[in-house]
Image 1 (cartoon, chains in turn cyan, purple):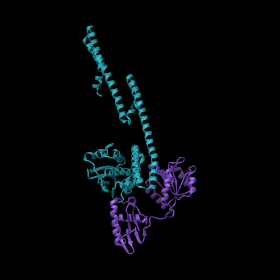
Image 2: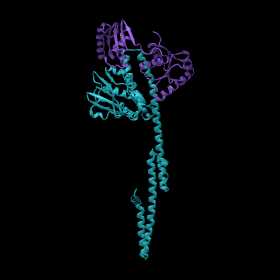
Image 3: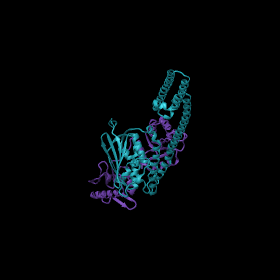
Image 4: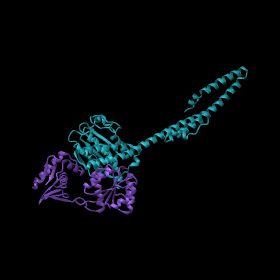
Length: 337
Length: 227
């Protein structure tokens, strides 16, 4: 806000003053007043007007600078009307009143949306817990009545279970901080648990796993890492080659980092898709194949979880040859305590 | 077979508790179920179990409260089973005197392994599997990873060891190829059907070198059997 801008916005006042002064001067001169007296009157008039403008300008400038400061310092900017002081002038007070009313309705709307979202989230979480009971029961029934058919059903139940887990993790994403417990974890145990989760699927698809790692300790939350590995495995199964599908799991050490690498010999990812596989809803060329159950959520969740857990995830692939998913763990000093 | 221990299942879902009872009985445990939840802690103690599988979300009283109550009278091991799987729940379970925590839906081998581990920890019996098993003059030495007949001895690879071990656990019975593969995947050997055939052929050759060429019998559609 410059003084020039201010004067422009007050152009009408200036114009009226100018015109009135002109009329007054002409009138005074016609009444045979001495020119010097007219000049003094005009100068005095302008001086008073200028002082008025300057004072108004500076008080307004101060007022708005304070207001903008407050606005910048606010966490939720829509709350400005709650903390701003009403101006002294009538129109300022009216504007303030209007702003307050509008803000109030925004705040109410936001509260009701937040409430709705919270209820929805709670419902989803409780639904997930509810649905786990019949899944558990169905699994037990299948285990107790082993036949080729129940084995197939078990595999499908594993798929359902993984999909349900995805929903749970998606719902909990925003409050990850409440839900993890970073501690010393043996990565090998986590890998074994994730393999166990997808065991039936692997066997049914005739895949083999070459697990080439020793006990490796990292700081992580095993539940979340297991979930991510499960997504990676499920992709390797989905996009496997017709026969002799194989996954190699190994660990590499970098500077202050530990890499867990899951390498399959599947369909691979075309270079133009490679940069986008972690995007939400992205399915790409592989996802459009027949029978593919791609939703574009699994890897998106992995990347988001990695960000929250201070881990990294990346991918390297060549179509028709291999896909390498690389999970990066910080090799913190904590490991050596 | 001797009963491995008495397990009480406290679970409000009828299907789950009945199927779980069947599973545990098939695994050699004596499994009891609780039908009346009016005084869970009292009726749990009346059964005098060696271990309690306790669901957390029960109709009247939470499993956590029941566990606290049981702890006032008894140190019987308790494994919590629940569909909630946040670290807070886990911590809560442990603070209220639980010995372990399994989340639903569980993988059965995991549940059985946890039960076995807690029982071993508590009663110190049957520390691990035996290191040597013998069937019809053939000795499988698990510690030394070899198979012997009389004074003749032959070393085995990890995969061959596990396959033979699986057959030795069901002496005289046919074990289907899928069951063997299942067993192998539970024991950190992740191979497919073809690799299994290759490995069995190798085991046969090794057995032949110690004079037990026909120790493993194959029957189409049924699987393998030792004898």
